[in-house]
Image (cartoon, rainbow, N blue to C red; front, top):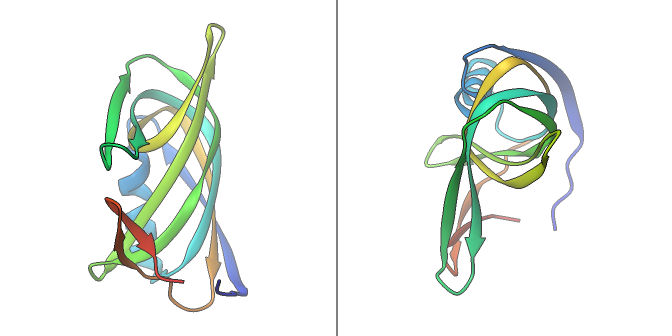
Length: 137
C-alpha cells in the first residue's frame, strides 16, 4: 500500500478521431505527470478491448467496431520504462447491451471528457508476476 495526495486535476477533451490512450500519454508527457488517476466519459467509434486469462497468463483481445457510449473509463497513470504508462478499463454500451474490459485502443466518435487527477510523487509499474506488470506499491 502507498498513500498519495492529489496535486491537481486536469480536464482533457479528446476530439473525434483521436485515440484515447495516446492522447492521455501525450498530455501526461507534456505536463510532466508521473502518477495519476483517470476517469472519463464520451463516445467511441471503435475500440480494441482485452480480458486477462490467468490460465494463459495472457490477454484475449476482441474488437468493437461500432459507435458505443463510453459509459465509464477509469484507470491510472504510472511510469514504465521511463515513460507514462496508462492502464484503463472501460464499460461501453449501446441500445443492444454493454461490453467491458481492458482498453487496448479506442477512437473517439464524438468527444471524450477525461479527468486526470495528478498525484504528488511518482508511481512505478515494474514488478513482474504471473504474466502481469504490476504497480510497485
